[in-house]
Structures are given as C-alpha cells and as structure tokens.
Image 1 (cartoon, rainbow, N blue to C red):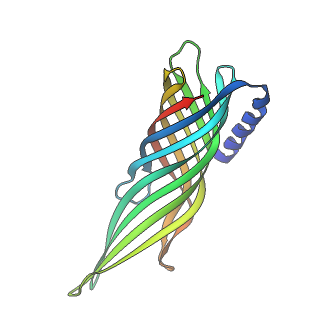
Image 2: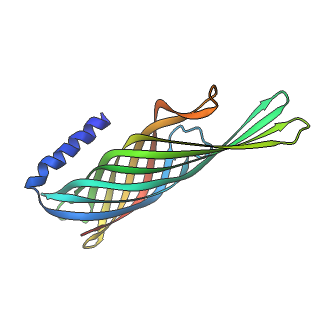
Image 3: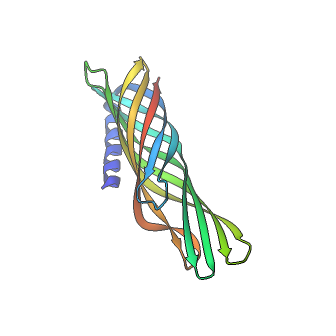
Length: 214
C-alpha cells in the first residue's frame, strides 16, 4: 500500500505541474533523534542528520513537488554474552547507515494562519554497516579478540508529516515526524555472517527542519 500511495502522489504531482502557478525551489536540513523498532540492540535510539533539495509548484493554498537528498543514521550500540562449559564469549555491535532518498513533498499554508503543514513520502536506498567485536574467554586461557564488519545495501520507503512556521519571508522552521520501512538484518549461524531478512522493520524519527525557499 505504501508503494501504491507514493506512486499515486508522484503521478498527481506530474499531472498538476503544467497547470500550476510559479513555485519555489527549496533546500532543507533536518537533525534529530531516531528510534529503531524491535532491533534487538540495547540502545535503540540515536541521532540523525539529512539534507535535501527540491521544487514545489503552487496549486491554490498548497505547493506540491519533488524532493531528493542524503542522510545518515549515527551509530547504535548493542552487547550480548554467551556462556558455554569452558568459558564465555562477549559480543559488541555497532550499527550505522547512510541513505539517499527521492520522493514527493507537499506544503499547505491555510489562509490567515501563521503555520503550515508539510507532508512527504518516497523511496530510499540504504547502505548499512554493522561492526562486531567478539572476545572469547576460555577458562585458564588468554582471551581471544576478533573483529568483523558487515555491509549491505537495500531499499525501503519513508513518509512523514510536520508543522511549521515562517521566521522570515523565505525561511521556515518545521517540527517533523518521519517513519521508515526497510529489511531487517539478522545473523545466519550456518554461514557465520549477517544477512538481510525478508522481514521488514520500522524506524521513526522526530527532528527540527530548517528550510530556505528561493
């Protein structure tokens, strides 16, 4: 349903463009906190930043257009410990991701109100990195440390809403809420490596966005 909704909104933007009035180019920056749902990490919260640019066509009280940009989810850490008869193993994980995105963006400014509403949706490509450090502690033996890095690319979707106000004629500040959907990373004990799963997981973020229109 998300893919159908994104495609329908994209088609509506293209169809409306020829009849729309002059609009605005914009550049946008966001920074805030994100939360991975059911990730298995000890701390599922961290920070993120992203930057984007686009163009909106004016359609009455609304402006509808396209956006694209880049972003980064900063590292999330996790730990576990596995005990066995002759000792135990400690694992420490670090997860981070970079992403690029493209989608549609709508800004609605009701008359006589000092606020506007933003809606956005689209597709994203993610490059995820999972660093693992393992320390094996055999009984009466020196601990053995090993390190590995898992990197894999995949795609997903995003959508978000926000409320903001103009602090200068062409400079806006917005409080944004976004959700992301992507493939889960899981450990394959047979191959002793991490893989993308068919199971999908959600992430969500709350951020402050600053946008300049020109």
